[in-house]
View (cartoon, rainbow, N blue to C red):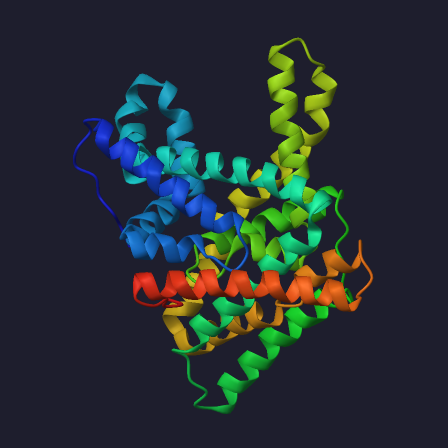
Length: 319
């Protein structure tokens, strides 16, 4: 799929629109149960997003890096246009803005109000699984197997039978590859993957610490305070780039060849992830009647909000 840009004039309104799209998509991706890819579909720029992302290849990156040589500048300029950077850059900045703002809120609420935060997330995830699953059918044993496999994998991880503790470079890069790939897939939330992998709170706090350290650095703060969380952010971003040029393409190819089976697997993965946020509550509170009731109330609120959003936009489609 190729998306060609014939104009080279920078349209400020277009840049602002792309930034606003990024804010919406970043906000959705930062909340488990809400997909940035679905937002892209609803706002009408999903095709352009996928075209721009798939245009980012190692070959084009090399061509751009070689653009410092006069005889190769025309080809480098063509590669930049093929990658649609006038759209991707403001979109990316908008996404980063939203994720940074929400990460700071999440890291604070995870410490002060874990029941409210993770109960709310549980409702979002459960409701998204219901809304996305309505359009899917089980026509064959392959469909049933895909659904059981997706839900089973998620439940095993959510039950802490497989645990990826935060802090390891390989784990952070892997989480980035999986989560960023999920961000561009309708129906799958990148932050949901991070919750499932047990990395959501850790990475949110590291991102918030990095942003605060950068602000302190301008006022004479320590470079060392920037380095540690900055390394975590850099590893996550590096993994995300790898994920975009590899995993995202694999999933898109699977959707093209085996749409029904792939969608069932993805939606079942979401359904099996419903208990994942509850683990964060259990780390801080015993499961008393009061804790269960509060969690259920916040989960209900999250579900109502997502069902309301589905009603307003006329329904979600996992593709």
